[in-house]
Length: 179
Image (tube, rainbow, N blue to C red; front, side):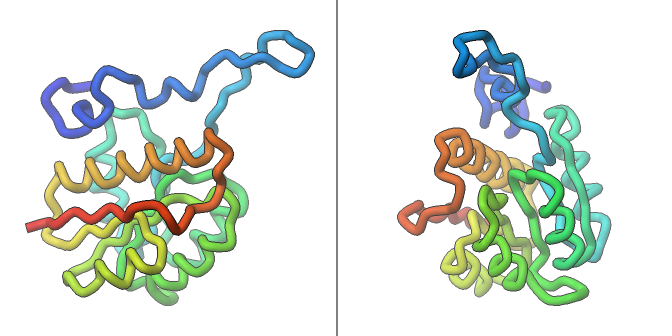
């Protein structure tokens, strides 16, 4: 991991995958070495594959697993079989919009944190009110994308590790102005 990029400063000296291979004790008192986390770190939901390519290049050194699905329907099918920490969704999709995904995520236990990407500032208030973690407005800045997605990942991981499961309405929304 490079030492002078926004991603490494987010995690400081802590390995973001430290949760993966931690030792726990089973009910019988014996050490249990099962991985604590298996899944996809970021799901890019976009009809345009460049979003997944962009995210893969940004998070290449982190070792994060990035998946891409072009539609809301395919993303929901993917979420039925996979655990995902963060879903980065385009404002408009071939079969609907980010709103469709947000509505469906509200019913999924351990739903991924939702980050919406779009072209206008008016998206922020609506997306945050609908429960998204954050909004990225184009033009995207690398440091803002890294910070938002890594923060969403950490928030999701904290929620799941503490057994919180679903998002709670008392969570303070994350807003990052991109100008």
